[in-house]
Length: 369
Image (cartoon, rainbow, N blue to C red; front, side):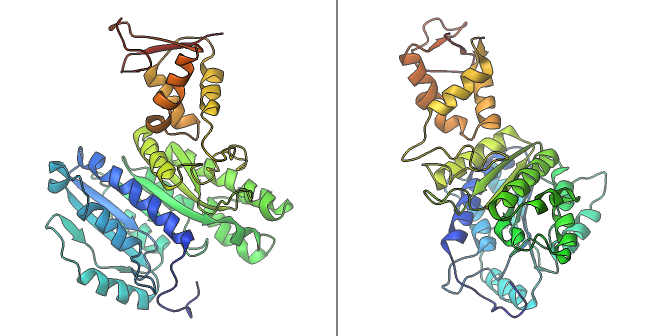
């Protein structure tokens, strides 16, 4: 968006998909983080005015409500101090958002900082620079949803991810980038976005082919910075394939990765919204009317062979190495099916009377040859 665009703009289904994923994840994240941390930071790097022209709430209001309106608040959530930081570059939208925030009635443990007026790179850089090296950053979730691809650099996200229990959710619209990828003027913005000039490998291609290269490079950069990464295609359509409008989640926690994948599958229980999960985004877009759990069984068999493995190992592999969510897809939908069909053996050393097709902690599994 340019400086001449109106203060408010139309709410789209594209935006709705982002917001469903954002809120779904925060509902899981807040209780987990509050169970071990007394302070929590939530950052919206491109906050906007807080409303759309039809009155729909924007991401700042949704993020606040995900905590304040949580239906299953724990005592530790009630005790945690939660700090919301909103960053917005345009003055008119800062004023509008500040007015929206001023109308809220919030509990004493929810703190709203004055809206930061300025670019995300500058403001967030200053915030990180001001943190004493000895104190560190409280567990932080940063939502980075720019209107295009400028104003955010992966090096800044990497700085956030260096702090323990910190996570980022970054939106990148690859079609907007590939349209101008051959132009010299785009180079500084993409060097900043990727943290290096590796993106230039895509200049030899056009359209979706270039976007696939950029996607693979960016996903790897996020994974390298965070430890774990998962992409989410928010504009996939049946028969069209990967469109390139992608959210990238970065976390150092297997639990965080699992909870985000559950949120992704709740947004799209058929396919995880296309789940462009590999360097080739079409590679795992194999779901049609319903998920094909034989793919997960095949991935487990390919990884473990006929060697014994524990249910814990199966859960970790499913979360980290496949597009599936272990809690939703592993036991009843995959392992139990394989066991009933005689393709899988299961036992429990401490519980010889384990009920068939159940997999409590300590269960040992083996695929038959």
